[in-house]
Image 1 (cartoon, rainbow, N blue to C red):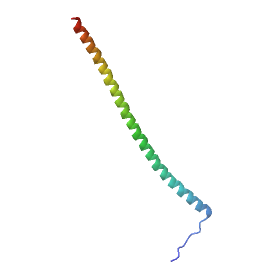
Image 2: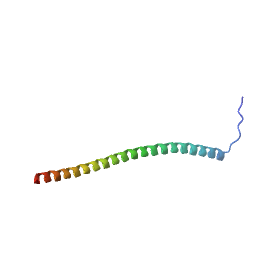
Image 3: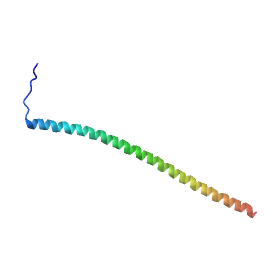
Image 4: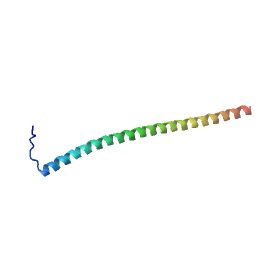
Length: 81
């Protein structure tokens, strides 16, 4: 069974190869871009959680300092009596 082949010019063959390579590269680029974006979002979400936790620790420390100052004031007032 012989295959019938259509004569293809060199320019048509080059065009077909260029289109095929461009499509393959575009697919791979899209895949890599998606992976990089996902990694970037994941890393920034982790950093955002860390930042939120640090801010919360700072607020707790400030509140403890305020309570300490109130306690010192109360003890000072009790000693004066």
